[in-house]
Image 1: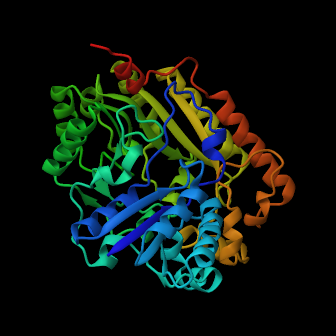
Image 2: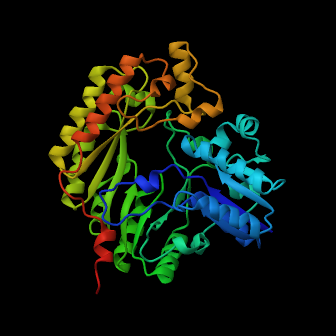
Image 3: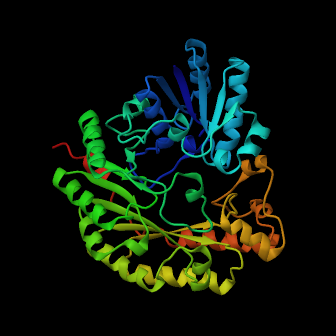
Amino acid sequence: MRVLLVSPGHDGEHAQHTSHRRVHRDPPPLGLLYVATALAQQGAHVDILDTHVEAEWKGKLGGYLSVNAYDWVGISVIIGQRQRNAAEITGLIREWSPGLPVIFGGTMATVMPVEIKCEYGPDVVVSGEGEAWLGAPAVGVPQWSLFGAHYNREQVPYFHMLHTSRGCPMHCTFCYKHTATGGYRLMPLEDVKRQIETMHAETGGRVWTIGDDNFLGDGARAIEILRWMRERGFYFEEVIGHIGQLTEYIAEAMAGVVSTFIFSVETASPRLQRMVRKGIALGMVPRKMGWLAKYGIVANCSFIFGLPTETQPERDMNVALMQQIRQENDMVRGVSYVYFPLPGTPMLDDIERYYSISARWPVKEYEDANFWPEDGDAGNRFRPWLSRGEYDDVVAQAVAFRETWKYPRAAPYKLDEVLSDKG
């Protein structure tokens, strides 16, 4: 069996990308890698095409289809531009290789499978995780070499992102992560070490980014991984965790191993905290930022503006909390998003009950989903509980927030440091 897996990321982002990092890199499509590894373990030959990093992806797709006799093509379908791209790629496959089965998987295929099938016409729609659909056991250590030429020492354009867990243990009402995955599972500790050691042996790399939604789901395990990384002379450029699970012991274990800790507060309003079910003790957040400062850790803190029923005083609370955070650690960057009513989430149901409106759209409409709005965009059509003027005010405040709370100076990045280390 031969299979082609495609990540439909060609939205112009790669060519226009700007970054505060001196070494540019893009995250690999890890979901496809797990599926590819499961297929390879079953004896299949797998090709992976990431249109986000392949400038000439159309030519490469055509070449793959003309040379290889594929049994099927799998496409990962995520809300927004990549959903539109999946449709474009499907059209090219139908034109160039009539009769070749096209299979859609990913988040949108999971939360809107019937609508995806009707609108885009794939032969098969896979809900949930691809390995389960294949009848394959959980992949322990993915086969990174399946990424081919993009898997390299310099990490350009890819960088070495890895998972040490799958899913998320939280049940935030605005997020569909827990809906679209098979639950929260920790990778066995020895598999984590084996994955990192294998990648180091193959590439010489010593820096990784943790792509888990919550690396701190098991604090004792996280500390053990961090201590082992220090012993091996390895680094994590970024880790993502729930701020409620950050302890001073974990912050200390991060010292000299982790450059940036990424977390979300979502809202500084106690009332809205209860609504989103984030489970954060807001009064502890500044103190925990002090722990990170003590051990030399940079942080990114995310807020959502425009939550349903949010008031102006509650948005002002976000600013006030960020000011308290900066007093404890000046190297915490404030990031802002504008709430988007995602299909398949409890908050969407709450909105419709509270406002007596519909906040659902035909699946094709979600091609225009916008999570990082800018002044003057048309995103208010996805937020019908806000007038155009109210929406513009929320967007302006969100934009001003992230402009105000940028890093005051260049943040340290371990990849830059290690790549410049000629010793």
